[in-house]
Length: 106
Image (cartoon, rainbow, N blue to C red; front, top):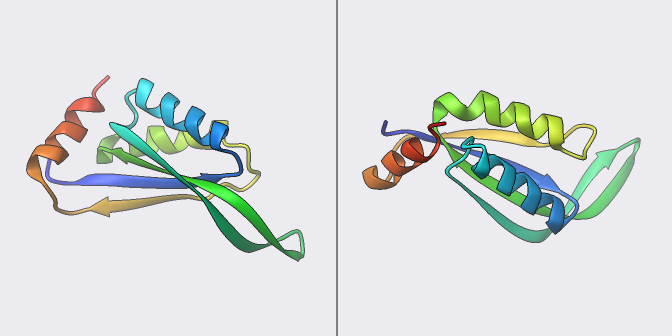
């Protein structure tokens, strides 16, 4: 229980970020979610360079809940090809990692 995962995504509206965050926490797929932004993202899309203001959502979850969280994000994300990145965090405050595991139990 000494590892947690951080799952990140970005969306184009604060309200959408808030909905994704609340749904993940309410469904016990994440212990917490942090919304930050806006941040300007520049990228290639449909053969052109685009720049968009986006909001980032960072979810803290247990490794065994990642697949379900990613599935929920993909199903509810407004983007055609959403950025969903998963990072495994190997150490940290043991009390915090235990709390993340406890809060992600259905």
